[in-house]
Image (cartoon, rainbow, N blue to C red):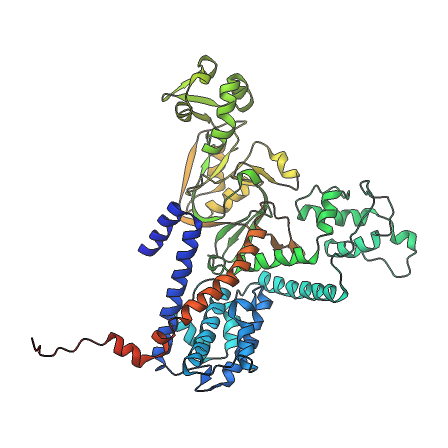
Length: 550
């Protein structure tokens, strides 16, 4: 705990580079402790080497590490090429120390690979169990056991095959679907409709008989347009069936771009917090603009949501829902206050009140905003001004607000603009999550409160008074950013990266290769401490007291 606090303090003081260096040092220390304990428990007997040769397990290890590619991990992070060279005789160890380094390198590589699959560093007991049994089977058990992960893994294999074939053929860019400069609408014809129909079959486009005439095959009919509409809705586009630049952009994504997206999402799914979740919970898929509620492990409710716009993103985090506020008042959060309301207050306070219906609080009391010279106030004085809107018609929170403690001032709530749910691109809020079926969500949450009924909720809503329904049994809620999901037909959708977070996630994995290789060298510098028990004992032996001659 003290080390983690130190990491945070130094990161704040000196920047991310210092934090990254300390994190690398911490990983080296973790690896040292695990490997030191592992070899001590087996009386320092090697696993991969035997004096001046590699054991069968040692010869099998490179092929196991090569399997990292199927998980979107670069095998070179685990020194694969170096191991292959040693086994092929090109870099075979020739001294006792170099054989020890080969032994330790192989153990470290497997430890790191296993940790990457598990999403966290593994301990000595897990590492020992991994090696004692069938290593490949044990590694498989460390990876996510989730249908989406398995589906993405299959998709990655397909994309790698396509890319490999393109490389062999010297293709740098796949042919694109185009329909001319004008928007392509139902009733029009084009030869590329044939290819479009194939792409839209997972979204319900009917397959035409082979004997169908060419004119019919090239017609963009209503059935195909409906499938395109479903495709557009799934990807956060305007679902009108008209094919414009944004729809074409997604249709024409190249396999390399898709591969990076698949790898980024597989890495997300390996994170520990996505492994074991409570059977009764709420999940908000930020990039999909979707909420799902689970009860006893089964999906119970599902609905569209509106999340933060790219400039005011909804943060990914876990917290617990402790209740529901009925007929909530709206106290303007800091971001909206600073970026929207204060500038309008200074420029045109009457317009602020007219547009948003808010009360203005200054000096601890409500004031007439048109009677104060806001422009003469300092930024510090303005920061003390508060805004709120009482419960009732027009309140931005609607009639329901979910109570969920978090440092981001983000929560779920109703809205006075249900029309926004009609759009496909639903990154429209200032960070909070607006739900399309607030009454259904409230009923789901309050089912967990003994003695509460929907009738009680309805009575309070009709009364107009603000009332907090406190839940004795809190419900966990996860707000996740994933750009891959299953649609209603069970197909994997690689959705729009509305916040642009896939690229940094993928780049982090690229940097991970160099970090792991550097850490391997740090571990090898301590080979004597880990694999030479006699020297260890001599180094740590208590001093012998002898009679002084002085």
